[in-house]
Amino acid sequence: MTPRFLLSRLIDLAFVLFGVSIIVFLMIRMIPGDAVAIMLGANTEITPERIAELEARLGLNLPIYQQYANWIWGVLHGDFGTSIWTGRPVTSEIAANIWPTLELTFLSVLVGAGLSIPIGAFMASARGNIAEIAVRIGAIAGLTIPSFWLGIVAIFMVAKFAPGWSALGYVPFTEDPLGNLSRMVLPVIALSLPMLANLSRLVRSAMLDALGQDYIRTAKAKGATKRRIVYKHALRNALIPFITSVGVSAGYLLGGAIVIEQVFAIPGLGRLVLGAISERNYPLVQATILVLTGTFVIVNFLVDMLYAAIDPRVTR
Image (tube, rainbow, N blue to C red; front, side):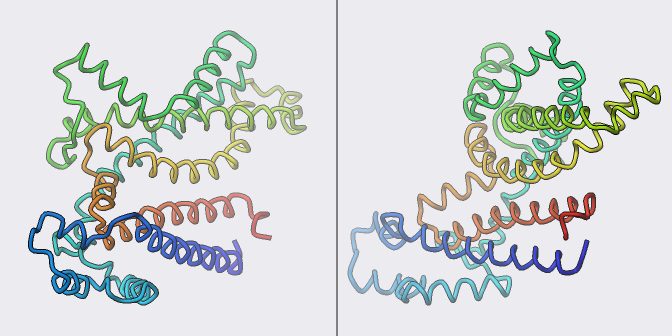
C-alpha cells in the first residue's frame, strides 16, 4: 500500500462526510413543521415574543448557512450539539443507544459473512446436483424476502409455538448474557439472511470462475484432492471480491438495523433517530445520521485498506 493511495482514500472519506453533513442538515429542515411549532403546540399562551425567544435560544433565527457553519464548527471540535427536548448533549444520547445497534449489526455480519463462505463453496463444488439446486433456490428466496417481513413472521411463529420465549426488547449482554442472546437470535436471522444469500451467490460465482483457471488444472494434474483444490486454491482467490462485498453489505445492514429495531422493539439508534425526526430534534437527527454514515464510510475505508493489502495492484 502506497502513501499516495492512503492519502487519496482519506481525502475521499473527508469529502464524503462533508457532503453527507450538508445533505442531512438541509433535508431535516425541509421536513414540514419545525421544532418551535412542535414544542409550543400544546401551549395555549403562544405569542410572537415567545416564538422569537425560543428560536433565538435554539439558534433557529439565524440564516441557514450560519446555522450550518455553527453546527459543523462544533462537530469539528467534538461538540455535536444539545438535544432540543432533553437539554442533554446529543453525544450522551447516542452513546446510550448505539450499543444495541452495533451488536445487532456485528452479529448479523458475523452470521451472514461467516456462513456464506462454506455455503458458497459447497454450491460451487456441488454444482448441478439436487442439494446445490435446493440451496441456490433458498439463496434466491433469501434475496427477495424483506428483512422486516421475515422479522414479523418470526415474531408470529414465536408467539404461536413458543410463547415463553421473550423475543422482543433488549437486555444488555453485561447484565444477562443468555437473555441478551435469546432476544438477538430472531433479529440477527432476519437481518443477516439477505446478506447471507447475496454473499453465498458471490462466493459460488467467484469460485466457479477460479475453478476454471489454469492453476487449478495444474493442481489437478499434480493429483491434489478435490477438497484441497476447492478450499485451498480456489477459495483463497474467491475471497478478494468477497471482502469488498462484506464491507458494502455491512453498511447496508447498519441501515437495515434501523427497521429491524422497530420490529423487535430494540432501543437502538434507529428508534432514536425516528423519534428525533418526529420531534424535529435537529441536533440529534444530524448527529445520529452523521454517526451512522461515518461508520459506514469508515468500514468501507478499512475494507479498501484490507483489499489493497491483499492485492497491491489496486493501489497502482
